[in-house]
Amino acid sequence: MSRPKLPSWLPIDPYILALAATVALAALLPARGVAADFAGGASTGAVALLFFLYGARLSTREALEGLGHWRLHLTVLAFTFAVFPLFGLAARGLVPHILTPELHNGLLFLCLVPSTIQSSIALTSIARGNVPASICAGSFSSLAGIVLTPLLAALLIGGAAGGLDAGSLLDIVLQLLVPFLAGQLLRRWIGGLLTRHRTILGLVDRGSILLVVYTAFSRGVVAGVWDEVSPGRLAALLGVEGVLLAAVLALTWYGPKRLGFGRADRVAIQFAGSTKSLAAGLPMASVLFGAEASLAVLPLMLFHQMQLMVAAVIARRRSRDPLPDGPVTPAGPAPAAGTLAGTGRHSG
Image (cartoon, rainbow, N blue to C red; front, side):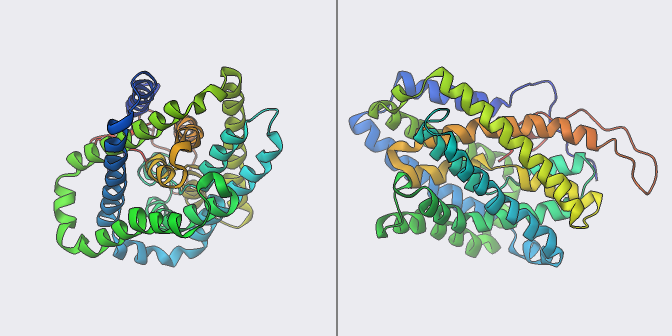
């Protein structure tokens, strides 16, 4: 099987540029009045569609077959939903001198989001790690995140995420869980169709997320929430996220070694346990935060690009590691942040 490669000639993922352009459009021409109502309804439908497609594409059989490597999967889940949130809670000490309360809520939210699937698989393959384990670990993380991310957000962020009241629970169930389960139930009949039209579905994915971002940032502009964010605060946020990423990358590499995992498993754990899914986090934030979603997703958008750029360098270096079964084959171009070559799919 050929190793997935990500294009090396772009320093920034084109999809990240599209997200930035969408944010700029929302700043210049935010949806107001009837247009805002229409955009809000369309965004709600887009979120439901996204999770329906997630459910329809996720192979339950493959996920269940991967349960045999339960120690690895539990380790990835522990990093994703325990270690990351602990770092996010510790960052509360940076409020208000370094981070505003709103930016900290966004930072904590990114710590609660499930890991990526596509990009962690590609990076694991480039670094010659355990790709099947990476596929299962990403799938389990996404499944767990549909339930754990909203519940942890309600528990740890509280009122800023809408609280854990009957209305927010109903929104979560109707917009996230019900469409996902419907996709799983219908996968038997539509799974082949989705596979054959993967490129078109990738466009639907990306377009839906751009609509969610435009709606969220329009609400923020109209509400005036961006008046509270200065360039200095943004620079501080980038610095904090850099420290967070470095700490998690170190823990996901050296921690599994202490637990007795081999090199291939450690590679899978590092890339599945240190990355956060933009594709899953953005629609979740739109449901959980409402008008505050624009600030809530900003840390996730910045971290997503940072994690892929740094992970690309690490994957390239890991590909040169000596292996027990013979000499190292020179790796292809280092991956850039973004899309899987030949699929047109966003990295998640």
